[in-house]
Length: 337
Image (tube, rainbow, N blue to C red):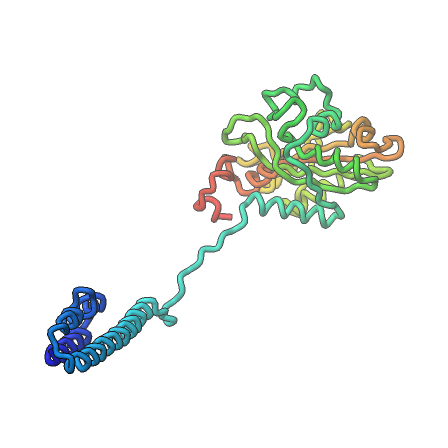
């Protein structure tokens, strides 16, 4: 039996030293409930009283030896696995790094920021307001009566009878007049919504920037001078502007404002359709009723307001003929700007 124990020890060592030894199988074969060492111990009943302690002690030594060698082999195998893993994950710093794609600002955002900076340079403050608005601020406070066509549900997105998606950022001006005493000089950029079918020149959602100036002695001349400075900074120093009579409920008198074509300089080209002028915004003197609704005395103060669509400026500037391109998120299109 002593020879059998020595043989078990040698066989276990031999298997543990083998390449890619299966440690669990070795443990089961020699130390398991049905293992070879257990079988030897079960036969100790046939030994004499003198042999039993000697063989028992030797069997425990063999068990302890195999367990220690198994533990050492497990540590060695783990170290080898870690080495292989590190070798696979090794970073070669001599290789060039992967190029990281960096995004660019959307042309709408670029142009909006440029417009904002022009007016900030003239002393305007940027104000914001809710896109989900009361019809009071969107219509009533802007001198648009209840029977006005613009209130039709075919033109405006109503949520309830008196809550809607704002159709213009002019409602921010109405809110500003309620909470800010003159002098007032603000612009209000943001998204607006109208019930338009999607096509090359229309979208149910688009962007506007509207401006408001209220103070003592404000005239149409101040409006014209402000818009001339804006146009020259936006489209070039040689740009001219032209006022054409128009009607807006919240301004009186009102005007459509054109700028000389920034491609042909007014001579006529494909962009301006041979007219030499491009319609760019609407403007006028703030209607006395709008001032009264805002808590401002029209006998003391006067003011002007203007509004322009950012998409229109972007499309004119970059000669884009389809507004839908601005919303489709096609990287091939956007990376040009």
